Amino acid sequence: MRFQKSSVIHITRFLILFFLLFLSGTPSATADTAQVMPKGMHRVELQNKFWFPITERYDTRGDKQDLGAVFSMPLGSDGFPALAAVEKAAGMTPGSATLGSTDVDLTMHYNDLILYYQYGLTEKLTIGTEIPYYWQWTDVKQATVNTENASIGINPDSSGPPLIPLADGGIADGNLAMEMLQEQLRGMGYQRLENWSDQGFGDILGGFRYQYLNQSPYRLAVTAGITLPTGQIDDADNLADIEFGRGSWGFFVNSNSDYTGIRDLTLNATFRYDHYLAHSQTRRIPTGAGAVLSPVKESVDVQLGDKVEVELSSIYTFTDALSAEFLYRYKYQWDDSITGSGQFNYDLLAEDTFKEEHVGRVGLSYSTLSAFAAGTFFLPMVASIEYRDRFAGKNVSVSRYIRIKAAFFF
Image (cartoon, rainbow, N blue to C red):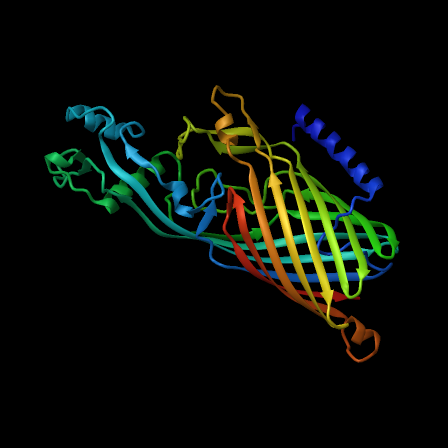
């Protein structure tokens, strides 16, 4: 791994921010609250996220668009040499030869199983890890060519050239045109645009939480750790795959705080900062602005954008066993920085790679901890069900899921 000057600057910024948060006690926390485990106690949690099918995304302006819109592109002579040759041979106006435009309809599916483990080293210090395992698949429901504005079609005479102008008897057949495009994809080294599925581990997290203040009505803690690049990254040759990880080592720090001065209510907030180290990755290099496909592949240096999160939540306890949670999260990640050794415009790869999201979540939890302490239940555990909605954002999917969690203590 190559440590660049920009990485050193980012690491320095991370360390400064870490100690400022640690010393200042800025009011913030995660939805876990600023609580730590009692010394010697273990906590194991299993959770499953059941995602609703994803068919839309938020674009760079925050407007919703179909996922397939990313693959929508005109099939004209300016981008396809075969069409340019037909255009020249037929004496057509330059730029007028077109098969139409691609029309792709796809749906992405996710199912996440995540294992959490925590252990109380001392009364103030807890260590833990997060190990995710993902099932992901893409359904390409439609991949064709919209021939409404086509001027070039398929030649019905198999003994002649495959493409001829519609005026000369060409047939505007969207499915045949798409099949020709699929073959061109293979010729450029891509896999066919079709259904995809895979499963595997995501990026694993490990870290600690130190509670440096526990004086009613305040609890303050700092959480920090590392991200291990154990998840499979995006395949440059597959247009339909979904990445499992970011491909880079990372650091994160949270400033956690709770306020418990209102009866039966815990208010908490969190501030989180993530930084990733630079890493090498094989990418397709755009040959021009707006290009979706490229025959050029190169190993480039990727510096993922820093990420910040602000999270506000409240937990209301109805009884010793039943509680409800309400949460809002704002997340922003800056543009990536990508460099290479060739003569290409690598800024095109990093353009509009920023991400922004607004998320809301509600949940109910049932705890047997009090019943276990009283000897009326045999197992100390907390079971939860949550609904989460990403209701706004930029460069992220329009997504919702239901999550079921079960935490066990021993």
